[in-house]
Length: 252
Image 1 (cartoon, helix red, strand yellow):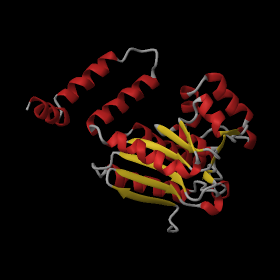
Image 2 (image 1 turned 180 degrees about the horizontal axis):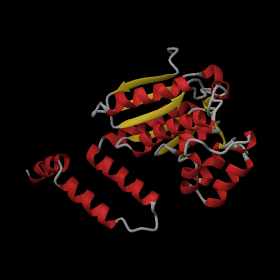
Image 3 (image 1 turned 60 degrees about the vertical axis):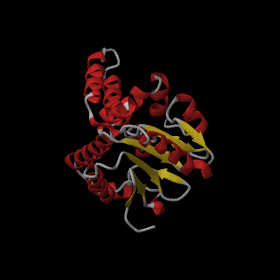
């Protein structure tokens, strides 16, 4: 694999981003963040791409979070805020975009690595994976928006426990509390991700983007009725090219 900190490979409608710093457990550096932005620009400019898969190089670690050795250069509050805002913007682009984002978790996810997982729509994990929000043990809080997303995603007490204790949980525990979605043997990780991508891309990309929009709205304000949005999306897709083509074939 190349020495790029973040590798992008596209194959048909699927783009795979590989965190490629195995020598430091795929920790996110400032250089990797810049690569993230550049690769997202490339993905967003390609209308054929419907799914983004994020994984880590090697078999031991998905992502160990931020590279503290690299981030030690951030000596001012302003520099710290700039880094935090940059990574938050990257993860928002992933989750808020019209493409499905799938995490193929090949190993441990620590600290910011877990924050990345919260910005993915699906998390398929190898059975040996381990998870820990290590921020509190390091005297920090979540800085990439992962704390908020975690508290919205799983049961409140489970989220608080992970954040306050910094404890490590295994893949089965992560599945039980809803932090991840599917658990598979390590040698079946790639095939499990491929099966899911194939099922998704077999359907309308316009409908997919609409369902993602609806899901974001419901998650951001679960107490509010979103029937008006759902109705608008339905009408938009009814008049859209994908459904009109399907209807024409059906009527024949």
